[in-house]
Length: 438
Figure 1: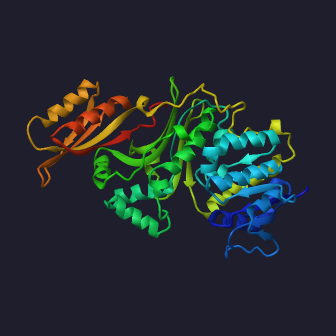
Figure 2 (figure 1 turned 90 degrees about the vertical axis):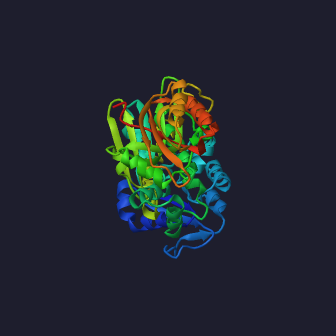
Figure 3 (figure 1 turned 60 degrees about the horizontal axis):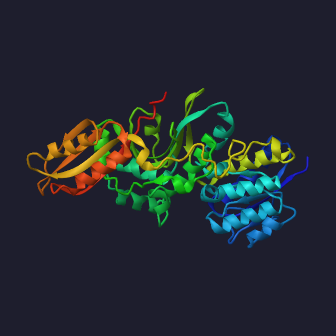
């Protein structure tokens, strides 16, 4: 059969990995696709010494690849928002299929991109945009197609998981482990996207859209980072039978859809609690299949390239299929950007349990006032730990609550922080069982 000719834009870590996998495994890939997949052109600002590009057209202008009539599929691996969007839209306008690993692009501009691709009858594939080499998008979109998804929760940023793992295992502070992660190349010089949850929110937005059949709504995702989690929090969670993970969580409720990223206490016996280091994992609960877990390398050159090439295989198989018979981009037909059938709930309406840590002046009656404030908001205390006073005569108090609405907890924290006997901000970490709907 006629070869599928690919143009790779970006020859960095993932681009280089994709080029090498395509060339190294060309025979096996051709057998799986029933036709050769050939790198026709590469667009890159700089050469990658780990890639042997002799015999391949190389250009410094990625838009040349998007307009090349000999390229059937453009592989966008340059990252970012603006240039990547323009590049993908140019490729679509020129009738090319697109494969991308760019989660930010899909989360923010995906609705627009899919609409343009639909009008042109071309494929946009993005397996590598979420969790690197883990085929979770294909699993949600196709393998779990019989299910009404109830919830999903994932460790979908390796940097944050690396930091929390080493804080727990070694009792180290956040800043110390972050510096180590940067030295090892696991964290960027500016780690904001990773440690503040923005990267995870991009990925969660995509997963939730595919799982629940809603438009991409990154702007409505609640995002909270791990920079305020202390070694004391990690230790206390451990003593209470929990592990702190930076989770992306999306749940279907009667009132709407939860879409949130934040530090979370989960019981030690849950499978997600055993995911350490830079690994990723996503738990999905379907009404028919029950709980499932997808685990593996969430980043890296060849793990991510594995997903990129898998998308290229799908494109090669479907390239001659009538557009209306292909699997929809986001799994469901007829998703409209203005669809409000399953609205994203504001964080104030979320119901969960809580871990609270506060420093109180060591004098009689303080704990009673704390308990009264919680009681007035209808919040029950599940566990309480009062530790030894510090050098400044401040007593660390750890509280675990039963499930309550976030709005009520916000009021509790506001009142606690206004008390003269409470020093500094109150630390709040949400608690999830993740098996409650099994």
